[in-house]
Image (cartoon, rainbow, N blue to C red):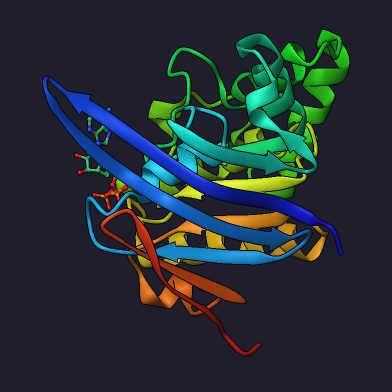
Length: 229
Ligand SMILES: Nc1ncnc2c1ncn2[C@@H]1O[C@H](COP(=O)(O)OP(=O)(O)OP(=O)(O)O)[C@@H](O)[C@H]1O
Ligand SMILES: [Mg+2]
């Protein structure tokens, strides 16, 4: 299997006045296509920083990030946003839905960005929402949805352009147990279809469901283990 992700000596530094803080330090890691990994670690250890780098939402200070064979540093900002749109799905802790758009319109955004026409984008958005169990919530605004429903809209949106890899930053942290389970189940189904999965979580009930677990401490990868399936 090819690697979906390769990190080589990846460092991210933040400058605060004269102080430099390395949030991610010289990290090396690779993940094979179709595999799933949970990232765990204490608050402030660099998990979100790392995921944002992998997701192309931010650039490393040093090192190389290769996703699906593409070195992200070789892409300018415009090319990177196109690459993200085509290859990477991202699910945020606080859903990041557009509040003035209905559920299906939120899901349409990445499709329209990809150049899909309005009618086709609408059809696909509706079918994606049906797949996450929201057939009866298509025309609801985010404020009319529960947390679990909002996160399922966000998952549907992340899958709009059939990403090769799905990244999620504490996707179940703001959900009740039942909604968290349903989102987790959704991720597993997506992974079964061959989409690689990287999920940050504080919850051991979530991380134990993954084939691999990576622990980050103080910006460094401290433990990487495989769970038996
Ligand atoms: N934009 C920024 N500017 C300066 N420092 C930052 C910035 N973003 C993050 N940091 C620092 O980098 C470190 C890692 O932050 P990060 O958000 O990656 O942690 P985390 O592991 O995701 O924590 P949490 O579990 O609380 O979400 C923290 O010490 C944080 O203060
Ligand atoms: Mg975080």
